[in-house]
Length: 414
Image 1 (cartoon, rainbow, N blue to C red):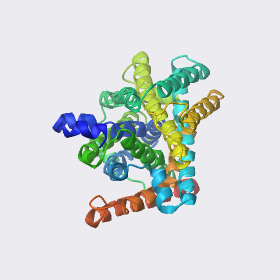
Image 2: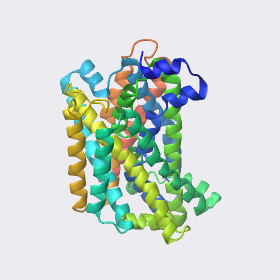
Image 3: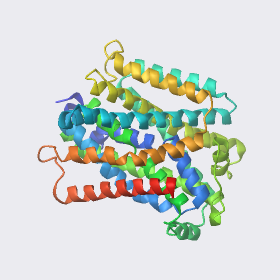
């Protein structure tokens, strides 16, 4: 029995939940990353409230997917890549990990670009921003434990809540909001492209790998499943409320009557989201929200890539190991951050990269969710998904995969 489980055995109710909570909340705050904020802003600017309903529909879907990762981690005590290797062999393990690495690279560039954009908004050069960010994240990983990294991630991610306040201040017209939310232009390729981007912005390959590894690293077991599920459910609701808030804020200002246009820079997005707060407070509010979103996601995607590559190589891969004992883990973490920062400092088109990465995530869903469902079917009793829940999970996952891929292909080639 792990230390966390031993402690939880002596606790009940809220105290037990607080001891277990963390992995779900961190991964969900990371889910509303810089790319997701940009995708939601584009959705509201170009289509008003027409993509708002999708944000609410995606909350339970997100929970269904991530609950399976909690179940796999708590029951098996093994990471996602390790389980694929064990059940389906080295080829499929590396194939799955390769898609993960592609997703992580795309996400990392998006997050660092978002941070560089916020820095530019505040008058700081991209190179200076990258030096500060990379230095701080390396210090965090090389000197901290999983618990300390989790607390830092939740603290910086909490700044995303500013978007809820911005949506409230924007004062959307309720009648326009409801009418727009149910006005769905299904046949428009541009709309379908953003539908796919929003699906990819909510269900990302690296989330599956990260939360399962975090459940293990935190020492959670099957006794902790009820509290871990609540942690995941609360995170799923929170992340989609934030996404909805960004859609509402931009729709209320730029997307009225379908007159909104494309947002091409971080500065334009800041101006669109915060017109009622004044230039100074608008910049501060947007800067805090975007920085929180990008920082927590940078932590998550970089740790995920490092953990998973080391895991499939059979090397040590947790923050509890010293750098000299886990060179692959810390090496990949460091290289990813440094190379990503160098690329971003050289200049990048943030908005097009961000939306494109989310569509790529949607196109990768068949691989990630397919293995997730198959692995959940191999669990021992009573944790194996079966009966009605297996059917519901299968339908939700299949529908998400089909619609995400269809929307992406139709949007790209329609």
